[in-house]
Each structure stands twice: as C-alpha cells, then as structure tokens.
Length: 254
Figure 1 (spheres, rainbow, N blue to C red):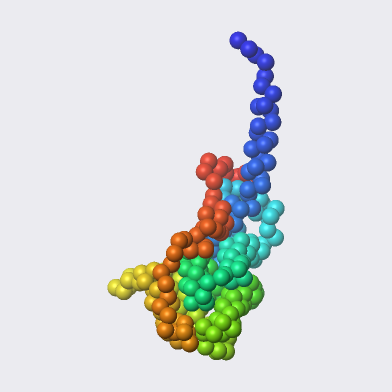
Figure 2 (figure 1 turned 60 degrees about the vertical axis):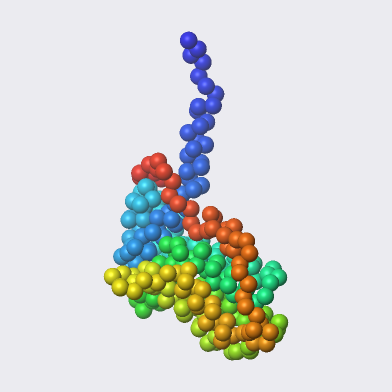
C-alpha cells in the first residue's frame, strides 16, 4: 500500500478557504437582500444577516461598517447595475423610440420588477420617513438615474420626430409611477385581493397607453412591430443581482 502523502491535499483546504473568503461579501449581500425585503430595514439585524449567510456576526463587520453600509451595497449591486444596462441599451439602440421604450419596460420587469430586488422599493416607501439618509441615498442612486434614463429616451424620440415634446418632469414620473405600482402590487398590495394583475398584460397595456399619448407624426400611425428575437435584457438575466447563497456552507465561519 502506498503511504506517500499526496502533494495536492495540503493545499486543497487553503484553496477552498480562499474561494469561500472571496465569495463571502456576495453571500452577505444576498442574505441581506432577502431579509431587507422580508422584514424591512428597521427590523433587519446584522446578526440575522450573519446567521442567514452562515457566518458569525463579527464576520459582517469585516466587510461592512454598519447596517446602512450593507444596505447601500445591496442597492449598488442589485439595482444600480440594471440601470447601467439600460444606459448601454439607449446609447447603442438602432431601432425606433417606441421599440426602445418597449425594450426598457420589459428590461425593467425582467431585471428588477420580477425579482426580489423589487421589494426594495416597497422598503424605501415604507421607511423613508424614519430613515431619511437611506431615502436620500436611494433617490440619488436609483430614482434620479432612472428618471434621467427615461428623459434621454423622450429626448431621442423628439429629435427623431417620433414623440411629442413634453417637459421631462413630470413626463418621466408618469412613465415610472405605473412601474412602481406594479412592484408594490407584487410585494403586498395585491395580497388577498380579488383582482389579479398579469404583469405581462399590464406592461403591454402600459406601453399602448404611453405610445398613444407620446407618439406623433408617422410614428403615431405606425403599429409597433412584434418583438423579433430575445429582448436586450435577457442576455444579462443570469448575472443580475447578488449571487445566491451557496449550498453546503458552514455556520460561524470567519
């Protein structure tokens, strides 16, 4: 029997440890997102985040100074990247502005509205009065860039003679408000209601209403062609948002 020790085994635990340590911030962010959406900001404790991620409370402080910093990281790693994808789409889009608006509405739903990340909007609306700092952060990092994104789309449509010239404010708010409502409906308002809202049909009808009010010239008389091929956002869906918690994690790891 060969009793010579393997040269690979001593290094294997160290490599696994290194991989686990590198993944730990993402595990904490994923756990925090789930708890923030489920419990809200005030009721989420760092020790609960640590327990959900399978680490000690002290480990959380190795990566985040406090709960506010953890929350900001959740927003930056879940919502902000989706907005960046929207900017990329607008900058390189070659089709008509009505088609671009459809892409953005579908992309918003696929990357944000249909995911747990949508629950962060409910959290902000519910707790902004008690936590003005996180409300201001959310407004700066999410609301303002979102408004600016849709304002660029409206300006594009006006420049191409496809959309009517309307003041960006409140026009962008009139686009975003129905999206916020749909997120709130999915995360509480619709509970126990006899009314059922199909998100796909909702978005189709929203787009129809928006285009009826916004389009002008030839674009007003040109039916929106069916979507050909996958939507732009679908290529990013697997990587959107924080990474899920891994299987087989060990509790109280530091």
